[in-house]
Image (tube, rainbow over all chains, first blue to last red):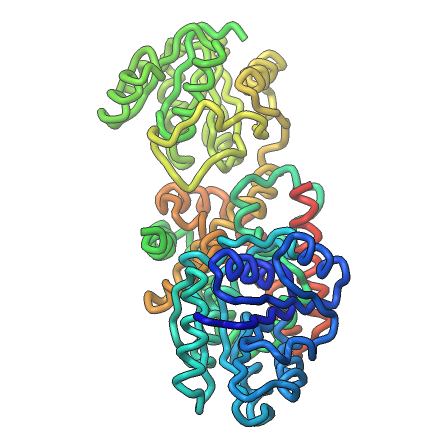
Length: 279
Length: 279
């Protein structure tokens, strides 16, 4: 790779895991961490995850690659702010779960020679914070890279090479197509999980087993982060919700009719997909 | 316990796990297995899980305790059929996921001195079959026992003692209250899981991560078994679905308005329950 300095903005679960993997694989000569929380900076330095820690965003400016691992509703503003201090050829990217809104908000606001290419590693956890970071989080996982129009071949190949050097697979996609797909594959499951958990009355807590717990695992995620993801993917998430409610209506009708064949067919449709996913 | 002969009807994941636990804990002198599938009977005998194997249901009649671990829509008829051949004081129970319909269909059809008390171990898996059975499946798990009106103290205490002797905890509940709670804690999660899996288009399979997979794990269950569970708990499952769709409408409205506070509040409501469940 030959990254001289890698800057990670937001040294939490994802940022910390990327720093750990980059360190272990010798991907960057120097790794600097930017985090608002003093405790996180102290821990990251103490554990040798980063070489240098700063609270001030502009300290990231002299890096070759700056990766924003912060909530999706703050990434664009942070990227624009730090870019004013960057040398030409500095590459900016991120790990946000929605992509189009970020690219739109960054568009036209970067100095000449500084590029922002979106990234989304499909790896995560309902846990958060540096304490849960792992050098293995990205291994074998897919990172979706979303270059905005006008991205240079050089920038695109640099960011793809970076993710591959951490052991991840890379798929390049249009940002809007990413958001449309992830609305169904990630944001909707989170919404459903939270909606289901939210309606469980306390007197029935003891009557849950592994099924309820698995189905609601995502609900443990941080509400502020997920509210931002939902809001920056509003249109596609509403469309995914429409599609889901259409399927619920089919279940409701079959159940209302006591229609065994229709119920089995709907259940089989889900089972086929689920079994295929696990092949 | 002092069970002389325990009969397990349906030696699959649950029936096989119960037989294994009963054997390991010395709960019964003799365990007989009834299963329609020759392969299952051969395997259970070969592995020493049961002492005797039969395809014919009536072979269970001479046991002290007969446990039906078969699909919910067949249990009542099987219980009635075998009971005609039972001695007085024979106790019948089951492991079905819905309880009221079974008790209703058995009611008044058993010979004098033969009792049926419903049971539902809150343990299971999307896997099925004897190959996945485990002597530990019930350890520490809750078994809900639903005695119909007129159940003798003797029958109730025998079935509760049986489950406890396998390492499970026991809670006695009214069958209808069980069905109402489980509609929300088990049957609705299954329905949502299958509905979500069913709408994933093949071109997006690669864009799923652990979140989608956890949320849809239940969808791998057997459609015929779950169709029967849904149909025998129709009213309560429709009520649970109503409640869920009401919560979805709240999410939809907050999302449509881009209402950050409302979204965070709904997500927090789910997170609180999920976090409490894991304490």
